Length: 383
Image 1: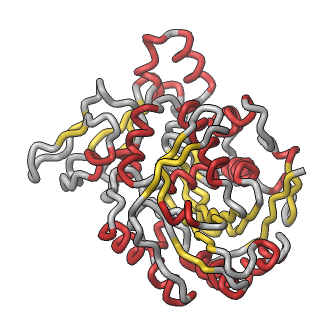
Image 2: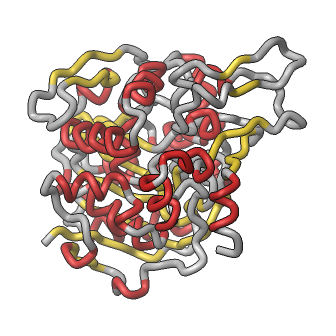
Image 3: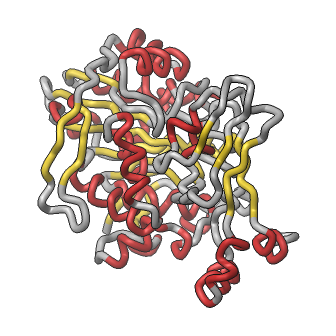
């Protein structure tokens, strides 16, 4: 039975001590890597956001893992490609590393930050749906990838944890292309499952000391959870994260598709939890994104396609706070967002919008709201 290891970590001041405890439960760092191996630490660096915003993997978690890996004799580097709409350039990486605190992590741990912005097209014939990926070079050169994710909600995939974090190995502006081609959640989830198998991280660690609820993955609200989690299975970590959030499997595209494909685990009873009782995982008042469908939403939208628009959740520009920076336009995979000039707010062509929410995800000013259709608001009032 697949194991997920958990330790309580009330705050980031204790991250070093608690991470050591977690890694020891998993066999110790010396059992995970050999001296001289090249190890990529792959955090969630979605955007250049300060650590207290809970958008990215916290520096304290990164430092703890990096120092242990260095002591075990590994050649360690931090590498990621930020979210859709950001070019994979040295300038983007410099800003992201500085604001997220990764430059301080590198300095304290004595390790480099990746500035190689090349990528390669990798053939993956074993993939069920996807046979090739554009993966950043440091990941391909590594002997091992440590997947250091953040527990967060996600407007499109409903949650972004261990499996979804690996989308960050896809290079820069190729990411919107995936969204343009994979407009259905099931299709995108299948791509993520194939990508996770292709990358095959040696270990997966989840920063759930402070996670994100609500309109994640960028503009949600920090939520103190007080946990560090680890597993050799990214899928198992996602099962546990879903249980913490109270996100049913029926509303988790990754788990739905994993179950259809015969992958495991997809349920808590297929996981051996070490460090916490399964009955105590769920946070009762955890806020899920408004894009998570209720049962009647799904029923009416499937039975009566004419109602589908009324049950949808649309991105809408908040004109009063929009600064016309262009982040939403650049992130849009189908190019339906326009900006006339620097004095005019962005405009979304609703008819062409595919509801991927990349614009909402990447807006640095929280100037895009998720607007529920009339029927969605009526049936979900008071819920």
